[in-house]
Amino acid sequence: MKTQVCIIGGGPSGLMLSQLLHLKGIETVVLERQSREYVLSRIRAGVLEHGFAELMREAQCGERMDKEGEIHDGFLIAHDGKLDRVDLHKYSGGSSVVVYGQTELTRDLYEARDRMKGIVIHNAEDVQPHDLKSDKPYVTYRNGDEIVRIDCDFVIGADGFHGVSRKSIPKNVLKEYEKVYPFGWLGVLSRTKPVSPELIYAKHERGFALCSLRSQVLSRYYIQVPLTDTVEDWSDEAFWNELKRRLPKEVADKLITGDSIEKSIAPLRSFVAEPMRYGNLFLAGDAAHIVPPTGARGLNSAASDIYYLYRAMVAHYKQGDSSGLDNYSAKALARVWKAQRFSWWMTTMLHTFPASIEYDQKLQEIDLAYLFSSEAAQRSLAENYVGLPF
Ligand code: APR
Ligand code: PHB
Image (tube, rainbow, N blue to C red; front, side, top):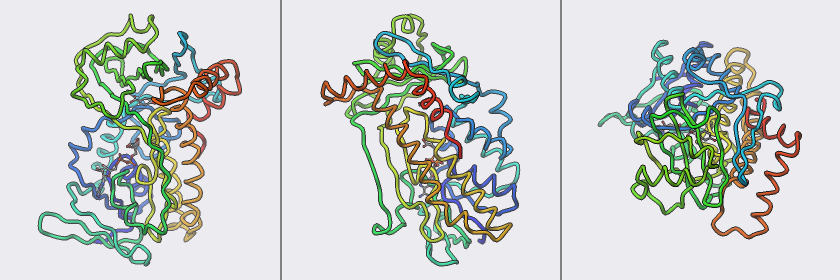
C-alpha cells in the first residue's frame, strides 16, 4: 500500500490530522491497534478550549459539538470553606470553553472519516515504523498472518503515551522529562443531574475533588485517591460519601447520587519527550507529552500539535515550503511546555500531597488567596484555561 502520510493511532490527534489533511487533498492512512468499539468506550475528559473547537469546525466535524456541547464562561474553585468563581469570559477577553465529551468528539471524527471514505485500519497489530531517517520511510503491521507494508512520505506518531512511535526514536536522541504525582483520580460517570451548571474544582484537606459534567443529565465526578487504591476498593456509596465530605456543605447537600455507569482510576503524570521530530517521523499529542488532568489541557495541547503539523504539511505539499516541518518540534514544544506549567500549577495548588511540609501547605493557601485578590492572577488563569493562542 502507498500513501502520503501514514498516521499511527486513531485517537483524537490522529483522526483530526487525517481529516484536516484529507480536506486539502493530502492522502492519509490511519493505523489503530484497537477496535473502534474499544476506542469509543474509553471515557476521557470533556473540556475543549476555544482553539480546539475551532479546529473541529475547520475539520467539518463541529456540527454536533455546536448543538450538544455547552459553552462555559467560568468555573468555580471551592477552598477554605469558600466557593470562588473564575470568570473566564471576563478575564480572557470574551473567550470560553466548550464542555463536550472527548468520546463523543472521537465518534464525530470517525463518522467524518467514514463520510469521506478515509482509510482507518483497526486491529492493526505489531505496527512498526521503518527507515525514518530516509526519504522513503514505511510502516508495517500485521493482519492475522499477513504483514502489510505501507510506503509513505511521512509517519505521524499519534499513538498515545504507550504507543510504538516514540519508542522508535533512538535513546541517545530522545530526552524525556517526567514527573509522577503520588496520587490518582477516581472518576465516576453517572446518569444524574450535575450538582452545578459550572465545573467545581475543590481543594480539601482530605484530597482534591472535581464536579464536572457531560450534559444536563450526565455527570462526571472525580476524587483524589492514593495510587494504591483500586476501583474495587470503592463502592458507589463510598465514592459519593467521600465526594460529599470534600465539597462545601451547600454543594454536598444538593448532590444527586446514582449508580455509576463507569468508574476508573487514572494516575497523574506530567511528561514531555523532546524532540518531537526524528527524520520523517513527527510525534503528536499524548505520544509526545501528557499532563495531569487538573487544567483540562490533555486534548488541548494535542490540538496545537495537530494545527502546526497540518499547516506544515499543507505548505510542504502545496507550496513546496518545508520550513513548517523543520520548525515543528521547536514550535510545538514551546506551547506544550506552557500547558505543562499550567497543569502542574493547577495540580500543585489544589491537591493534598501526602508528605508535604507545612510551609508548602501555606503556599497553597496563599496561591488561592492571591488568585482571588488579584485580577492579574485571574486573567492569567483564564488565559491559560481557555487556551493560549496556537
Ligand atoms: N499501533 C497503533 N495504534 C496504537 C498503538 C500502536 N502501537 N499504540 C497505541 N495506539 C492507539 C491507541 O489505541 C489510541 O487509540 O493510538 C491511539 C492514541 O490515542 P490517545 O491516547 O487518545 O492520544 P491522542 O489521540 O494524542 O489524544 C490526546 O487523549 O489521552 C487523551 O488526555 C489525552 O485528551 C488527550 C487526548
Ligand atoms: C472531565 O469532565 O472529565 C474533566 C473536566 C475538567 C478537568 C478534567 C476532567 O480539568
